[in-house]
Amino acid sequence: MNAASARLLIVGPQGSGKGTQGVRIAEALGIPVVSTGDIFRANIKGGTELGQQVTAILDRGDLVPDELTGDIVRDRLSQEDAAGGFILDGYPRNTAQVGHLEEFLASRGEALDAVILLDVPREESIERLTLRAQEQGRSDDTEEAIAHRLDIYEKETAPILAVYGDRGIVDRIDGVGSLDEITERITAALRARGLTLAA
Image (cartoon, rainbow, N blue to C red):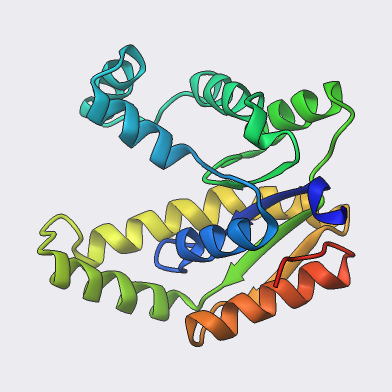
Protein backbone atom coordinates (compact mmCIF):
# COMPACT_ATOMS: atom_id res chain seq x y z
CA MET A 1 0.00 0.00 0.00
CA ASN A 2 2.97 2.37 -0.47
CA ALA A 3 1.16 4.09 -3.32
CA ALA A 4 -1.55 5.17 -0.93
CA SER A 5 0.73 7.86 0.43
CA ALA A 6 1.89 9.32 -2.88
CA ARG A 7 1.65 13.07 -2.53
CA LEU A 8 3.36 14.60 -5.52
CA LEU A 9 3.91 17.88 -7.29
CA ILE A 10 4.67 17.95 -11.02
CA VAL A 11 6.49 21.01 -12.32
CA GLY A 12 7.70 22.01 -15.76
CA PRO A 13 7.64 24.86 -18.24
CA GLN A 14 4.72 25.33 -20.61
CA GLY A 15 5.04 22.74 -23.37
CA SER A 16 6.91 20.27 -21.13
CA GLY A 17 4.02 17.78 -21.27
CA LYS A 18 3.45 17.88 -17.51
CA GLY A 19 -0.34 17.75 -17.93
CA THR A 20 -0.12 14.54 -19.95
CA GLN A 21 2.51 12.95 -17.69
CA GLY A 22 0.61 13.97 -14.57
CA VAL A 23 -2.48 12.11 -15.78
CA ARG A 24 -0.43 9.01 -16.69
CA ILE A 25 1.31 8.87 -13.29
CA ALA A 26 -1.94 9.56 -11.42
CA GLU A 27 -3.64 6.66 -13.21
CA ALA A 28 -0.71 4.36 -12.43
CA LEU A 29 -0.90 5.32 -8.74
CA GLY A 30 -4.71 5.44 -8.54
CA ILE A 31 -4.74 9.05 -7.29
CA PRO A 32 -6.31 12.24 -8.71
CA VAL A 33 -4.54 15.04 -10.55
CA VAL A 34 -5.32 18.34 -8.88
CA SER A 35 -4.78 20.97 -11.58
CA THR A 36 -5.65 24.55 -10.65
CA GLY A 37 -5.97 25.40 -14.35
CA ASP A 38 -8.52 22.60 -14.87
CA ILE A 39 -10.48 23.64 -11.76
CA PHE A 40 -10.60 27.27 -12.92
CA ARG A 41 -11.62 26.30 -16.47
CA ALA A 42 -14.36 23.93 -15.25
CA ASN A 43 -15.80 26.65 -13.01
CA ILE A 44 -15.63 29.29 -15.76
CA LYS A 45 -17.37 26.92 -18.16
CA GLY A 46 -19.98 26.03 -15.54
CA GLY A 47 -20.64 29.71 -14.78
CA THR A 48 -20.18 29.13 -11.03
CA GLU A 49 -19.57 31.93 -8.55
CA LEU A 50 -15.89 30.96 -8.47
CA GLY A 51 -15.84 30.92 -12.28
CA GLN A 52 -17.24 34.46 -12.41
CA GLN A 53 -14.68 35.63 -9.84
CA VAL A 54 -11.80 34.08 -11.79
CA THR A 55 -13.09 35.45 -15.12
CA ALA A 56 -13.22 39.00 -13.69
CA ILE A 57 -9.63 38.65 -12.41
CA LEU A 58 -8.31 37.25 -15.69
CA ASP A 59 -10.21 39.86 -17.74
CA ARG A 60 -8.30 42.54 -15.82
CA GLY A 61 -5.08 40.77 -16.87
CA ASP A 62 -4.29 39.82 -13.27
CA LEU A 63 -3.21 36.49 -11.80
CA VAL A 64 -5.61 34.68 -9.49
CA PRO A 65 -4.55 35.72 -5.94
CA ASP A 66 -2.66 33.21 -3.78
CA GLU A 67 -5.39 33.21 -1.15
CA LEU A 68 -8.17 32.26 -3.57
CA THR A 69 -6.02 29.62 -5.28
CA GLY A 70 -5.02 28.21 -1.88
CA ASP A 71 -8.66 27.96 -0.75
CA ILE A 72 -9.56 26.07 -3.92
CA VAL A 73 -6.65 23.64 -3.58
CA ARG A 74 -7.33 23.00 0.12
CA ASP A 75 -10.98 22.33 -0.68
CA ARG A 76 -10.01 19.90 -3.47
CA LEU A 77 -7.43 18.07 -1.33
CA SER A 78 -10.05 17.64 1.41
CA GLN A 79 -12.25 15.57 -0.92
CA GLU A 80 -12.40 11.85 -0.37
CA ASP A 81 -10.63 10.75 -3.56
CA ALA A 82 -7.51 12.74 -2.56
CA ALA A 83 -7.27 11.14 0.91
CA GLY A 84 -4.80 8.52 -0.38
CA GLY A 85 -2.64 10.95 -2.31
CA PHE A 86 -2.65 13.33 -5.26
CA ILE A 87 -0.56 14.97 -7.97
CA LEU A 88 -0.57 18.75 -7.86
CA ASP A 89 -0.22 20.53 -11.21
CA GLY A 90 0.01 24.34 -11.27
CA TYR A 91 0.18 24.82 -7.50
CA PRO A 92 2.22 25.93 -5.62
CA ARG A 93 3.47 28.53 -8.11
CA ASN A 94 5.53 30.66 -5.73
CA THR A 95 7.13 30.46 -2.28
CA ALA A 96 4.10 32.02 -0.54
CA GLN A 97 1.93 29.23 -1.94
CA VAL A 98 4.53 26.66 -0.83
CA GLY A 99 4.08 27.98 2.71
CA HIS A 100 0.26 27.72 2.51
CA LEU A 101 0.45 24.17 1.17
CA GLU A 102 2.99 23.07 3.78
CA GLU A 103 0.81 24.45 6.58
CA PHE A 104 -2.27 22.68 5.27
CA LEU A 105 -0.49 19.32 4.80
CA ALA A 106 1.22 19.57 8.18
CA SER A 107 -2.17 20.12 9.83
CA ARG A 108 -3.09 16.67 8.47
CA GLY A 109 0.24 15.10 9.42
CA GLU A 110 1.29 14.92 5.76
CA ALA A 111 4.03 16.22 3.49
CA LEU A 112 4.93 16.00 -0.19
CA ASP A 113 6.76 12.78 -1.10
CA ALA A 114 8.38 14.04 -4.29
CA VAL A 115 8.51 16.92 -6.74
CA ILE A 116 8.76 15.76 -10.36
CA LEU A 117 10.58 18.39 -12.42
CA LEU A 118 10.23 17.89 -16.17
CA ASP A 119 13.37 19.43 -17.56
CA VAL A 120 12.89 20.72 -21.10
CA PRO A 121 15.30 23.14 -22.83
CA ARG A 122 13.76 26.56 -23.49
CA GLU A 123 14.16 26.20 -27.29
CA GLU A 124 12.27 22.90 -27.17
CA SER A 125 9.40 24.46 -25.16
CA ILE A 126 9.11 27.36 -27.61
CA GLU A 127 9.16 24.95 -30.58
CA ARG A 128 6.45 22.70 -29.07
CA LEU A 129 4.21 25.63 -28.08
CA THR A 130 4.59 27.37 -31.45
CA LEU A 131 3.64 24.13 -33.21
CA ARG A 132 0.65 23.63 -30.87
CA ALA A 133 -0.49 27.22 -31.52
CA GLN A 134 -0.36 26.61 -35.28
CA GLU A 135 -2.25 23.31 -34.97
CA GLN A 136 -4.94 24.87 -32.75
CA GLY A 137 -5.04 28.17 -34.62
CA ARG A 138 -4.18 30.15 -31.48
CA SER A 139 -3.11 33.59 -32.63
CA ASP A 140 -2.33 34.73 -29.06
CA ASP A 141 0.50 32.20 -28.79
CA THR A 142 3.15 34.26 -30.55
CA GLU A 143 6.80 33.48 -29.95
CA GLU A 144 7.06 36.68 -27.83
CA ALA A 145 4.04 35.68 -25.69
CA ILE A 146 5.43 32.17 -25.22
CA ALA A 147 8.87 33.55 -24.27
CA HIS A 148 7.21 35.89 -21.75
CA ARG A 149 5.31 33.00 -20.11
CA LEU A 150 8.54 30.98 -19.92
CA ASP A 151 10.27 33.97 -18.25
CA ILE A 152 7.52 34.09 -15.61
CA TYR A 153 7.80 30.32 -15.08
CA GLU A 154 11.58 30.50 -14.65
CA LYS A 155 11.37 33.47 -12.26
CA GLU A 156 8.58 32.03 -10.10
CA THR A 157 9.48 28.35 -10.14
CA ALA A 158 13.21 28.52 -9.42
CA PRO A 159 12.64 29.61 -5.77
CA ILE A 160 10.12 26.77 -5.25
CA LEU A 161 12.62 24.22 -6.54
CA ALA A 162 15.25 25.67 -4.21
CA VAL A 163 12.94 25.11 -1.20
CA TYR A 164 12.09 21.53 -2.18
CA GLY A 165 15.61 20.84 -3.43
CA ASP A 166 16.96 21.61 0.05
CA ARG A 167 14.70 18.83 1.35
CA GLY A 168 16.01 16.39 -1.23
CA ILE A 169 12.62 15.61 -2.76
CA VAL A 170 13.11 17.01 -6.29
CA ASP A 171 13.48 14.42 -9.08
CA ARG A 172 14.81 16.14 -12.21
CA ILE A 173 13.48 14.20 -15.20
CA ASP A 174 14.70 14.63 -18.79
CA GLY A 175 11.49 15.82 -20.51
CA VAL A 176 12.71 15.20 -24.07
CA GLY A 177 11.76 11.91 -25.72
CA SER A 178 8.63 9.88 -26.44
CA LEU A 179 5.69 9.97 -24.01
CA ASP A 180 6.44 6.41 -22.91
CA GLU A 181 10.16 7.09 -22.38
CA ILE A 182 9.40 10.10 -20.18
CA THR A 183 6.73 8.21 -18.20
CA GLU A 184 9.24 5.39 -17.61
CA ARG A 185 11.86 7.88 -16.33
CA ILE A 186 9.31 9.32 -13.88
CA THR A 187 8.12 5.91 -12.66
CA ALA A 188 11.73 4.77 -12.18
CA ALA A 189 12.43 7.86 -10.02
CA LEU A 190 9.28 7.25 -7.96
CA ARG A 191 10.13 3.56 -7.50
CA ALA A 192 13.56 4.62 -6.25
CA ARG A 193 11.69 6.55 -3.54
CA GLY A 194 9.71 3.45 -2.63
CA LEU A 195 6.48 4.54 -4.32
CA THR A 196 4.89 1.52 -5.96
CA LEU A 197 3.03 1.96 -9.22
CA ALA A 198 0.38 -0.36 -10.59
CA ALA A 199 1.42 -2.22 -13.71
